[in-house]
Image (cartoon, rainbow, N blue to C red; front, side, top):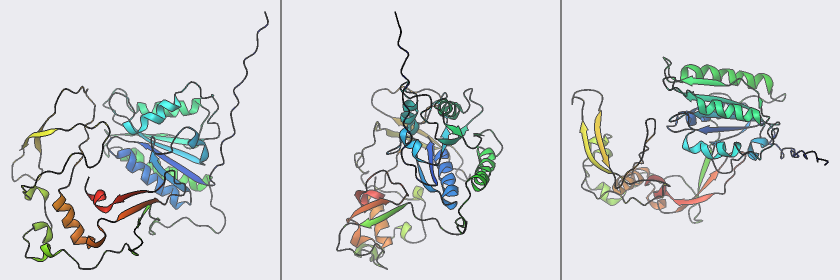
Length: 343
């Protein structure tokens, strides 16, 4: 009986690439990789790359998106026992799909930098797994990958700083600018990433009004934050805490603070505390898991800031937040200025 040879899966040519463009993606649990990604993004932007910095699971980021850029850089932390941070798992799972042809990313030039801690057995596993999978899919390493170790005398910066300097040198040498075009000088500010515009046509300027405060703040207030600056620990208020549902946080749990005791001497420069949080029901956790606390502001504090900045007349006007990146992937959204300062 004759057998039919398997039909090869066609690999489409990548969609139109952005000329001289860089996609910097991060997967970060505590912000270390995110900060590094923005630093790398600034390097690329100063070398005149149209640059986008985003989480691996950011809006519009998918496997096909990787093929649209001249270079793709990943800054990836390892959390728990060799796992990806929460904001990098979706893309990682997409890359693992068996339906992706082996050479699907053959037009992608990439590199990775991993952030880890060598005291853990699975040191930098997330970045290593990602790097290996990208190569399996045909992607090309355009600059040698790097790894940072928290156990280094200088922390992860001990490896990341020299790696980032080499990254810049590599871009200068291998992606030269056209004649007559110079990099953006270090002393020159980069263009803003986001632009706020007031949607109400009655307001023609976002410039804060000058020296205007609400009447209640001019009546001999004793609020220390309005005089010489303040330490939040010095302020005591009986105000009812803000509600819990101002902004929806997926998968969040509401906890009650039952103990907050300082365990360092009062004259010690560090304020270290023993904090106990309680919640209804049980939650399963393992060593290496991370707890993220979302703070809230009291309405009175928000109003004080608005008054001090002279924003009273525009405080409740809807705003349009515009992504000024070269290749925005999400439409503008609206919010009130109170929402920006009062989660």
